Amino acid sequence: RKQFRSSLSTLTHDELSTQSTQVWEQLFQLPQYNSESCKSIGLFISMPKGEISTDEACRKVLDDGKTLYVPRCGLDFEQCDMDLIRVPSSDASPVATTATSTSSLASTGSSGGMFYKDWPRNKWGIPEAPRSDEYNIAQP
Image (cartoon, rainbow, N blue to C red; front, side, top):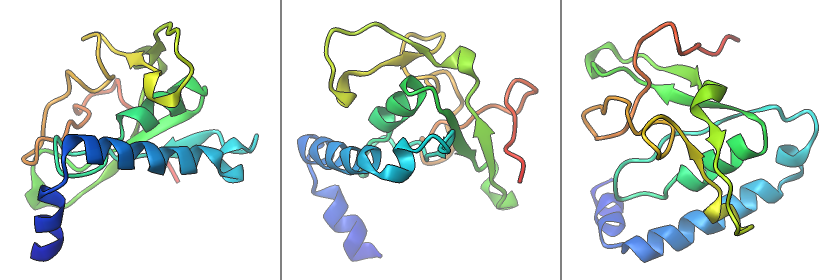
């Protein structure tokens, strides 16, 4: 685990960006994603650094009109609980763009950035949906 973390820490921003784009291009070409039966997607929100970025994927899912679920582990990690939280469509209003690549798609919330920019951060700096009635928990 230490060796893996060490190798991740040596990746540049450009390398992570390139790898992120490659991963999401593969995902969005899958027949399962493009199927009419695929109406919702669960994605994690990436850490501030050291792993692929999920911003591009979250934007694309929302732009494609699918329901996006993101995890909420809770700000208290001693509880070891996790819920999948539905991103409300009001948090996901598309912004017009002249480019057509997936990396240029944008969905904004009240802060003008990604829908989670105003969410509280957990101990790893990952945004998590606040505990409120505004956010619905996924049901089995």
